[in-house]
Every structure is written in structure tokens, then in C-alpha cells.
Length: 123
Image (tube, rainbow, N blue to C red; front, side, top):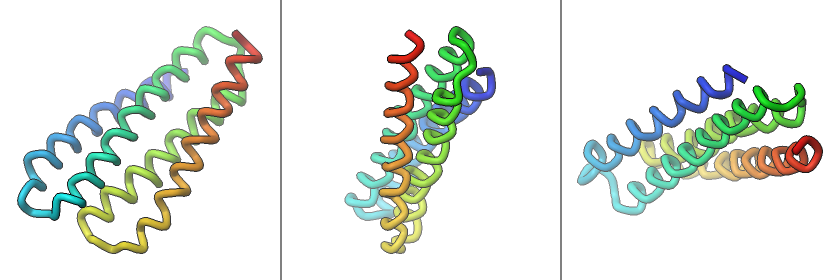
């Protein structure tokens, strides 16, 4: 429980910091399409940081659930693969990295499905 809250809060912090860096540090240094790519990574990181905090709170209130734990870890994996690949893509312009991004998206989707199943089962 505590671990997902901490990981979520760290990712929320990083999302704000990376968003500011994108807006102020990358503007004029990368093409506008890459700034949009960066912003997409930041947005999804923040959404899933919030999801991690919610999962941490639910783990503290509900019986121990591998559904919730897996949901949290899949969100972490999704942040790394989805947002991380978009950040690296923006900085390096290595387009093959775009092939990693959908794996992160699938991780996000699976995480939300597991959270739905846990909610149906335990709430």
C-alpha cells in the first residue's frame, strides 16, 4: 500500500518537473511536434501517478489483492515504457523508439482492467 503511494507521488513530482522542463527547457530546442510528444508523456505519467496513489489507498482499505498489486505494477511498467519512450524519442529523435510506446499503452490498459475487476470483486 505505502509503496504504491510513494511511487505515485514520486511520479507525480517527476511529471510536474518534466512538464516544466519541456515547457521551458525544450521550447525552441526541439520541433513543436516533439514538444507535443513530450507533453503526451507528461500527461500520461501524471494520470497514472494518480492511479498509483489510488491503488495504494485501496490496498490499505481492502483485503490484500493480487489484482490491485498487479494493476499498480502494470502502471509503473506503463509509465516507464510509454512515457519513458516518448521522452527518449523527443530527446534523441530515434523513431524506432516509437515501437516501445504501444507496449506501455497495453500495460496501462491491462492495469485499468485489473482495477475494474478488483472494484467489482471487492467494493
